[in-house]
Image (tube, rainbow, N blue to C red; front, side, top):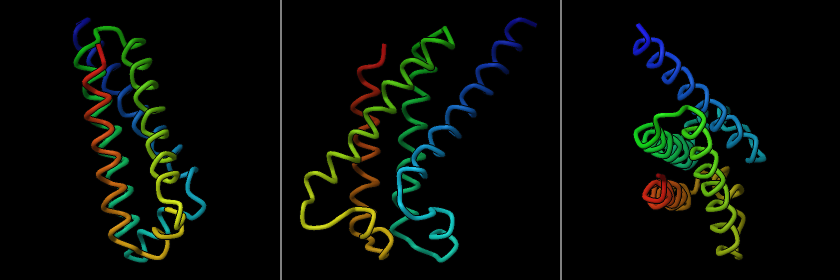
Length: 130
């Protein structure tokens, strides 16, 4: 019975952290992600999907490598901060334009690269989680 309770608590924690992570990411953009998705903005969809997959990668590795929910949450926080930093570094290294404006203008190239930045960062950071 204890194993079942631990599993349920772990799954609920993972889902909650994933939702919190996505809410924070949507607050970072000056536009409403869901409105852009409703319009069919592929660039925003790619960036949003990359954020979701990146947070899931970090959560999965944090859950797999830690038996404690507290340590899993701590490593998720570390990884999540790295994802946010990767966004701002990408913004810093593209001085000719603002990423959020390009996404809102449906620039699929920017959305694709940002998606890969998030996923690549998640894989790299996940290798550090112990």
